[in-house]
Length: 104
Image (cartoon, rainbow, N blue to C red):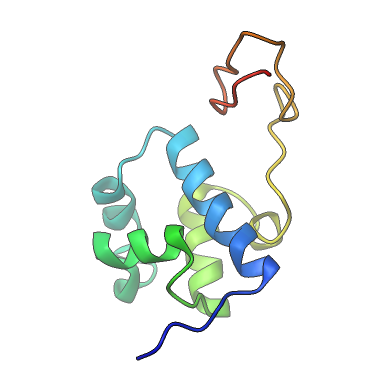
């Protein structure tokens, strides 16, 4: 199946899933296990990898399951991630311990 370019919201969802999974200290295998009961079709690490790369379309049911497994509301996956600690702007030369963003 040919790859359909994703829109800007799909790119935000992909980035948020990747960021939130990482912030929570979950590898893809652990995240897949957390999704098994919620949405079995998402319980494969290859599927999660494609979601995080933005090459797998996320339907509304997927979005709800992903949000639940990450401990956020579904609408939080649709807006750009905002770290509550540094708000994406850590001091120059430092990295935020909460989200991993490096200061410029």
